[in-house]
Image (cartoon, rainbow, N blue to C red; front, side):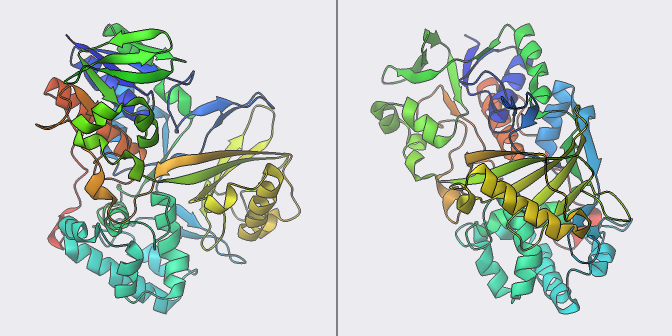
Length: 465
């Protein structure tokens, strides 16, 4: 009676299986690929033999649930924390945003005011909008679920410089959509919880190992509970008797279960549920309405250092108003080459390009951001296209994001998870983890989503609560 089938071995599926195992259940995780992690994983490059991440994934200090998951997996010590963010501003050296030892929301004020990238007028405009975000509080952003963040910036009188040099780089990187296309509440959450709530909230964490290694402990934890991960197992459908889901149909036959947790994206779920199931569960009625937004990751390898100037080396760079959005310094690999990982979010215009064209555009942005790198060309380029990287957190989408449990009007033992579900977050690893935790709690009656990191006292007094 405690056998639960989890469809999908991504972050949501791992989170659900760990919490189920801890509660005495036996999760059977079915994953089509031969590895864990879903869209946040690594692969062995057949050209070079290197183990490469699909894309650079970042965790923030405010991501309480994914950090909790790392702790349960015993891999929290594999996250390196970077409190400062570097913004390219050629021909000058990059600007640095770093929290000062001041109470939130004043902690970023000194470094923000020192940024040479932004004019004094632009800083005043950004400050005006930030004050409004602070005063509206967390509850106030709910009123923007059906309007774009671009409309909010218009109401705040933000200039084109403010939008392209500050707001757009942050929103596109965090939400995988530009300001005019993302729901206002999701972009507002990024600034309220990532910028205004406290210095720790904005601290950026990057894995010091390949992403796939972060999930390996899940195999042992699940096995010790009597469950298993069945990698390379394709799910064909869900068995349904008109009332309950009886199991999952795979290429190897039926896997029976007392409960089923689907953690796959909506387009994949649409393929494995039947018409009678959709008619029986309102949560399945809007699957085709979810759209996706792509991300492009580009691995560059150089025979000399490039992420530096005559003063210092940079762990990463934000590129305002450029086609490439981030560069991450991955250090020197086993072959002695310097590894740089570029990330392009909302990469619709890049999906039709071949690897050579992608490499040229990305390297041109690197040379723009760091003039000292001009003349240095990569030895190797490897691009990775995630065409369905995230769901589009567009205005109105929250109204159709389903909860984990069926309530009183649905298939009673079918549970839903995934970053596209009703997590209160945009498409992030934090959202995926929250959904997995929520689904497991709906089954076990215990556990659940970990509480948010609270804002600082002064920030709460100012309205951020």
